[in-house]
Amino acid sequence: MKKALLLENIHADAAVQLRDEGFLVETLPHALSEDDLAEKLRQDVVLLGVRSRTQVTRQALRSCPSLLAVGSFCIGTDNVDVDACLDRGIAAFNAPYSNTRSVAELIIGEIIMLLRGVFDKSRALHEGVWLKSSDRSREIRGKRLGIVGYGNIGSQVGSLAEALGMEVWYYDIREKLSLGNAKRCRSMREVLRKADVITVHVDDAPKNAGLFGDAEFRAMRPEALFLNASRGSVADLAALAKHLKSGKLAGAAVDVFPKEPKRNGEKFVSPLTGLDNVLLTPHIGGSTQEAQRTIAAYVSDKLSSYFKTGDTFYSVNFPQVHLPILKDSHRLLHIHRNVPGVMSQIDSILASEGINISGQYLETNRRIGYAITDIGKKYDAGVLKALEAIPETIRLRLLF
Image 1: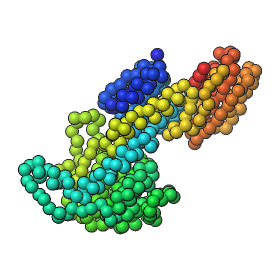
Image 2 (image 1 turned 180 degrees about the vertical axis):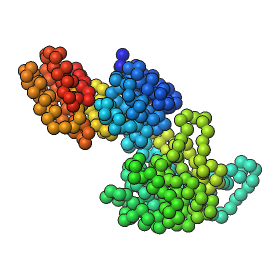
Image 3 (image 1 turned 135 degrees about the horizontal axis):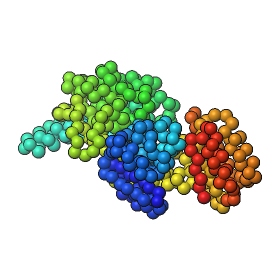
Image 4 (image 1 turned 120 degrees about the vertical axis):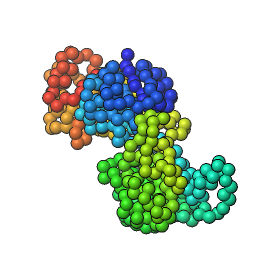
């Protein structure tokens, strides 16, 4: 029986969908340690689904000969060693667009709450203190929003903000088409100088670690707001806390952290706890029922499609191949190190056995080649052994 393991309380629709596709699905509500994950993967698991807390490391992948694909049921893949997956012929997928709206809505809501000082007033009222005042309470309309990282989420935040009357400025290292009236800045420093509110939406590239530190917070406008719902490594939280305590910054909202608890109920520690002008949320930017259902359907479909057809379209580590449905033939999936001459070896082996090729596809990236060959149903088992024996072979799969 083909097994799938889903961790971290992935939406139930994913398990239902994979069971409907014929998989035996085990679900767990929490993350696993490296050793526990390795032990689970040794139990003939072919598909693994995680969210953001399980670390899929090279060590955890060392003893899992059955594992074919890993699905990150979220946007990021920084907790998955995608190169280690590649070296073992394991495809990795994520959901780059599925929770875009959820994150954008949270950011807009947090900006409004921070500008109005809603949480201070709510806390006081819960304690029986009436604080009806317009002091330090501001409208969102007319404020300048600065977006660092103008991708899928950043651009949607900008569109929502503009609809509410904000002036939108953004900076991205790549040339991006401005939506609405958003204006592109030439540098991040320009955004920091202009904006009343800074929100960060960058990926997990190593260059983005420590993107915001003491110098960047110092460069922001007096009483500006800072929001981060992208990656925990982006901001120096001790430096952020210092500028919030000094009054340089008026407030912050942070949804992601350098070190996050592995499960609900574990103690959370941060330099930002206890600060009245800070809104902390436990990495819930994409945690809406709508987003989780969409993610469950999308990633499950990618995992199942790869298992059944070899399709790698939208994989984050494999060469991307969009394959037709297999009809009246067998499909050989040859994953190999990307060096010259492998395809000629594959074709020579098939030709020597008089095997007709009904369809063939090859895509490569810097590390591997992915060769897909559809052949007739009649061939000697020695053909498979010969293909596996090609020195550059990482993995050979047969679909029929």
